Image (cartoon, rainbow, N blue to C red):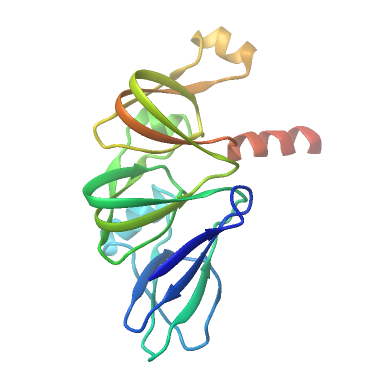
Length: 220
């Protein structure tokens, strides 16, 4: 399988060449174009219970698509995300990565897709009650709204709500007001995420909640 990330960083998409017999798994609606001979099969996103939890509590699709090349020649597939931004290919070698809702785009067949309870505070901060957890072997592809920022942390770091994309499973997250009740209201920052631990995190430079707020102000 040959996967290229093109049109980085603003309008990134996945340009994929599948050799005969190869398969890639993708989020529903991620396909923008594909060879006519390529076979697409929709499957439950991790079994009926997990699929329901991902759909209604984690804002993920009920089904995921499996694209398989059953021909005797290479076939092409283009995958994208719903928002303009960057895409990262993250290799898994038996380790685990946590993804915030909406970040997952695609993965190799050897990658397992699960969910983990994120906590009530995360739900209050509109980050979702559950987070996506990917593990196993192979590449997982996830995207951002806006630019993608990679940062190594060792200790504590504060991120505005809606900007955290991916992080290691051993990192601890705490959702809190940015500066007390009055300070958070007057500053307009609201909730933030305090992340602690050691390792790499991924952030997006824009947030959908910020876009919605900007649109609402101009429609009022």
